[in-house]
Length: 252
Image 1 (cartoon, helix red, strand yellow):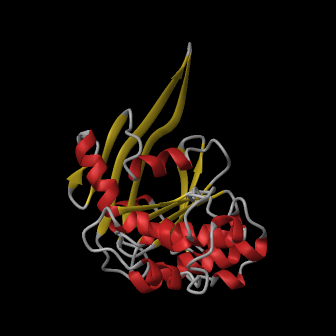
Image 2: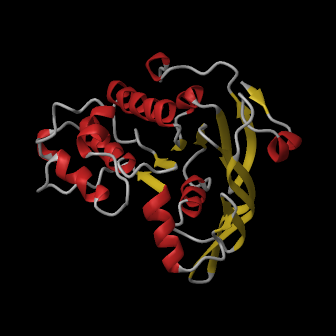
């Protein structure tokens, strides 16, 4: 794994070269006011994410990973700084523009699956396909995460890993440009977590979806093109993997 210099961050795309910057974040600061206490969740973060890369954001709880991901995904806005998505300034956008951005361009995967219990896997995925103009058929999305034989099963009939893969299928069915994943294996055992990571790696590889995965598990970083290490609201290190590992090669 190779550490990047400051010049790498500003000018050089990830290994492979030639990718365009999907996100350019500059000076991102986020303050939360809790009574008389002010918490600085992010402290002047600069970051680029590039076309078709898989990035792991690594750091302990409270390091600012989720806050940064929520800002990139349009779920939150920074106190200061700017986020540009494909040339469009998100931090100056209103609620209507951000809602459209989230709907059309971003897929979210969270630690907890948030499936609707009364709907089958196919129906849970179809909820997403109804809000975008050119969706992937639910059956195709579920097949991509190797659940083509579980289309008509309800969440209670699925394991935790299968439910997470349904959540991934739901996120990718709208063909998002960006997939943002917040601790997608956090509630899973090692074996099941690797199956979920295999699904994310396949989507990144076959669809070219820019993918960012938050984790506190350092072993997962080995599957990334780049690793962004955060601590205390700052990016403390950027690294590139010269030799990525497939998820089934990971151990923790």
